[in-house]
Image 1: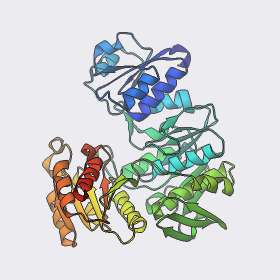
Image 2: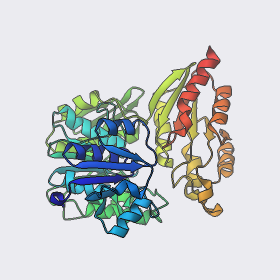
Image 3: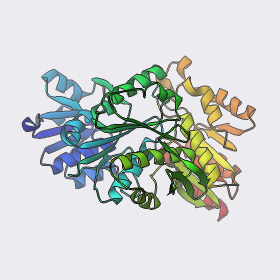
Length: 466
């Protein structure tokens, strides 16, 4: 296919992974174009600098140059005029994960990080360990590591470090993205039910992860969280080596002398003391996976620790956006109940003795549904005050499937929480501004922009204390 393809068109080009891949293909000499409904900075600026032609909106006319290959993003569905034209004309098309395998991963040593939680942090930390050691890896990450300054890079290195998402690849390929990534090492951080729009239950998620496991070669390695009961029945395989990491005594890479402190976490593995500038048990497990993988790939403990010591975190992962009027505003991507719970536990350590607010936007295809009605109420246990925003796109769900925010409020108040359901960003800012005190910490949980709420909160606190 490579020899026959000279021009490539990306439908839905402004996603981070799509844009990064498009720019890399342009750099490799392909003629690249793309289209998207949402063409605005920073991705529009990034693509312009990469000299990639981008068309605003979807139209059959965007294909008049007859590209040799069309890459269709996984948010694109039937009815899109470009998709309909491609299918009608029987043109060659593919998903982004399949394109990555064919043009960027094939022949490389792929380290694939999968799991319901911690993928972005683990992938970022692993990429930084390899980068700090001078190995210049290619990487594709669903976030922006502060050390690396971008979420994707494609180099000539034999190493390709990639976040393995279990979400589907495209409307025509409902397999998880990670089955395309040819793992030499597969890291399974954990496994829980998520993505209720594409998985029926936990067993369906486990089936998808089993497909990833079956791709690990005999000279590779399956690294799995030995503390997670949902993974245990999947690890008894004979076709590749298996190692476990975690906090229990039966794990191969086990954290000992565990110390969770406000300035980070310290732990010992096989007698070597590691210090991580990230807080919380979940991050210790993320780091254990990195230690085990890096050791397997030939890096020494001292090299790993040098990288840990200089790691600056990831945007939108417990990121302090600022402190105004004595109130700290933290941004976090967490949306699954477990991620919310673990982040709040870590905030309790990092900001010890301070009152904690949790503001949550139910925006994902899972949290908009009632599947986590009980679990969401329990996940805010370490928050003193909770605010729930309007459930996104409620009109797209049958009434019986929707999260009930009023029932969530009753559960929270019944457990002694100060809780409020406020539909708009403006109402939330007014409420928190009126009730927050100097010394409080406000953690905003959302996987979207949330109407610029972080800056609006900081501005409100600043004006109040002026």
